[in-house]
Image (tube, rainbow, N blue to C red; front, side, top):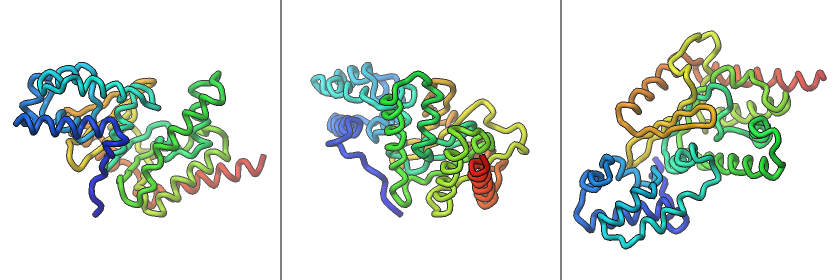
Length: 280
């Protein structure tokens, strides 16, 4: 089994801050719980900062400088964390994805970002921003494809997606774009790089009618859940809340088609889109 992915402190501000935080905490003889108390956060949250799965906020950096006698180190370097290619509500989740060993995602309307093709991503962003310049769309699509580079590793992270049937049926970008996008998912599934299941319309009401869900687990930090909506999202680390979302995902998996049947449906719909364009 491959070892946990590590962020390079030389190239990742989060990794740099996390490594320095662990060093200074241990040098001060403090446990994670001890350090969490003056910040009004849990010891597990301190562990997530050290592991690079959570983003340090400015007020936390100020308190850490004070408690650890860091002479402004954390405040000075915290500013670098604000530089992100992603919207504020998703930036922290995108950073956590990079170090996750397992990602489980339910997608109610769109193909998950990690599985999107360039043409599909561009169609989605154009729908979001119909008056944006091509340069803006180019940058957004490039950032999304960069995220997908996580899947170039043959085994890590384990990616398991449950796609609502609406994802397959909503024609984003036209038949050719959808045919390519679904073939891409099918190819990844056939190469055993992702586990994909389809939640069919026939399943009726289910456990995640309120929106999308992403679960992430890590080798050296507690799991996280990310829930999103229209232009908003929230990363959850409360153990009871995460456990509830894990049950939600388990129920979705139980209602979904098995992987083999899901693959057959994905490929069938992809062929329908391809034939549809040929008939025009």
